[in-house]
Image (cartoon, rainbow, N blue to C red; front, side):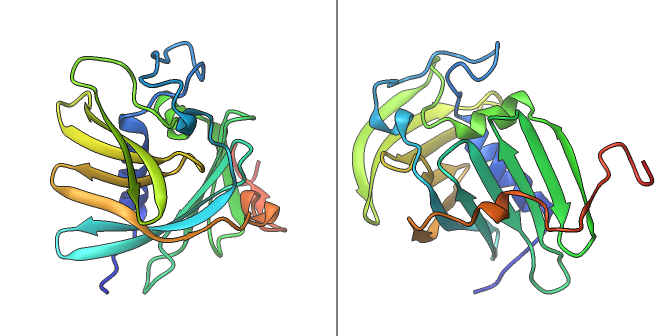
Length: 206
């Protein structure tokens, strides 16, 4: 399997995870949710998974894990000459912690509105949003939605009812889906920078 690493693919998956979702009460700008009684909207179990992210004839593996308590780690790269880049999204602290493996430093910043929506499990109500009902995908009981993103692109998203993770998304002819999945809780250490890394949020030397 060909792999393509790089920060761009981390951004792409974050956009796909957030563009069609809205975390209920996550910010003053949150929209009401479609199917808020759907069990997926209350899912909060820990998991670890790997997505396949296509780009033309290339495919990237992107890893993701959740502690089931409001923290989500997304990592990409770590192959060939591409360094491993990690973002930890923390809804409890309303912040993102980022670092690149081997750099010995990290930064923190507030969650953006779109990034808060990463934790949502249903798309926002609005024109063009359609429930696709229930379906099992590779052993995952899911609810699905078809919706139109702000830029007018039609997307389809299937979310696991038990774990609240995206199982499959189709957008603009591209499909992102789970390659590997485990319900084993990730180590708590994965959600913090490695020991010895320095906080350079205020800039180098501060």
